[in-house]
Every structure is written in C-alpha cells, then in structure tokens.
Image (cartoon, rainbow, N blue to C red; front, side, top):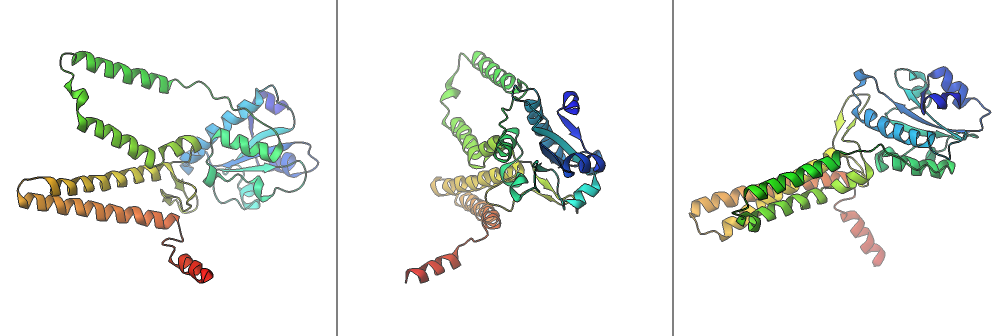
Amino acid sequence: MEWSSRRSVFRMNGDKFRKFIKAPPRNYSMIVMFTALQPQRQCSVCRLANEEYQILANSWRYSSAFCNKLFFSKVDYDEGTDIFQQLNINSAPTFMHFPPKGRPKRADTFDLQRIGFAAEQLAKWIADRTDVHIRVFRPPNYSGTIALALLVSLVGGLLYLRRNNLEFIYNKTGWAMVSLCIVFAMTSGQMWNHIRGPPYAHKNPHNGQVSYIHGSSQVQFVAESHIILVLNAAITMGMVLLNEAATSKGDVGKRRIICLVGLGLVVFFFSFLLSIFRSKYHGYPYRENREYSLKLYK
C-alpha cells in the first residue's frame, strides 16, 4: 500500500517478485506485465501496451473502490531474466494474474494476441479473474476534436473561395472516390482496430522476425488491415479498367492494353488476397470437410 501511494505500477526484480508474488501467504491479487522496455530491445508493442497498462492502473489507484485486494506491477526482461525463464515466458508483452491462493491457471494469462491490449479489455479480464471491476478513465485527448475543427475549417474555406462556382459539389467521380475510401477503410478492419486496439505488428524477441499477418482468423494486426486495404483498392482498380476497356469506344489497341492491365491487377492481387485468407483459415478450401460431411449424410 505504501508503494501504491507513490506509484500505481511498481517495478519488480527477481527478489521482489519472489517475496511479494511467489511467496505465501498473500491476501491480494497481483497483475504483472512482463515486458521489454529497454531501447535496445526495440519493442514498440511493449511501449504501447505499457501506456494502456498505466492508464488501467491509474484508473484503479484513483478510483473510489481502491483497496488492498489488487495491485499492479511489471517485470522488465533486462531486470528479471530469471523470472522470464522460470515462468517459461518467451514473448513480450505478457499479462498474468497471480491469485492470492494457488498457482495461476491457464485463464490467468491474458490472451493478448486475440483480444488486444486496450485498457478496457484488460479491465474485463481482471473482473473475470478477481471480481474487481475497474472503470477506465482516460486522460482527455483533444486531437480528434482539433482534427475535426481543421477539417470543417478547410471545407468551409474551400466552399467560400469557390462560392461563385459550386459545380464540383455535384461531381459524381469525386463522391465515388470518397465512398470507395470509406468502403476500403471499413472492409479492411479499421473499425475492429479502433475497438480492439491490436498491435501494429509482432516482432519475435528471439530471432527479430517481424510478422505483419496474424496466423489466427480471430485476430489481425494494424499492418494487416493496411495490406488488405491496398489489395482491395488494387482489385477494384483492375475491375474499373476492365469495365473501361469493355465500354469505351476508343482505339482497339489501347482498349486491349487497358484490358490486359486490368486483368493482371485482378488476377495478381486477388491471388495475393486469397493466399492471406488461406494462411488465416487453415482448413480452406474445405474440400476434406465437405467430403466428410457428404459421407456422414450418406
């Protein structure tokens, strides 16, 4: 409690971890973030997760329900390598709950890859494991308001400068491009990113390999949604070129080139998109499952 009065998240080394977390008896739960925040580790995900973790801990520390039943701490890899080895932790960040009695169960390890590390998601997990409900309070962020004000000012200024000629408002092509941008953003999973707060990518701490595509169909990285957006845009461009080649009345040779370019875009990028889908849905194309279902039906 004395530590919590000074800071909402306190750092643990090997000795403190064994004394205050591993050694019984305890009458409190401990949430521990295992991380690697040193600059030489180059773990950008760890820094983002640490910010969310700090928001959650501050929300608990300064809430009216704060008590001595739950505490937050973190262990840095460079300060507690032996702890990582003891618990067989091979990736960072990792969130674990250490209950007052007994050893941690499988559910006491937060499923970061599937859920993300947003403070609200961590709070739900903590409520499930400890029955302690934390209402997350975020510091005010005026960047969205400022961006909206700038956008409104920009549009208003443009309309004022073009007040004598507003025909561009009725430009179908312009509105079609705006609509396509919105569609690409939504179909690529940007709203899912906003809700779940996944990491941009994942860097393997052992070999340094960076993964931009998540292997599970239930989760995605931010970089993955950007890749899907570009692929969808390229496929759409190919379809537009194919339509242009079929409906225009220009030179036949030019139309043939446009047709070949459009066909190449569709075939190449749709194949790329399909390969990503296959890597995330490992049973695709479901041929064996369909044959098995037919046998059961017969």
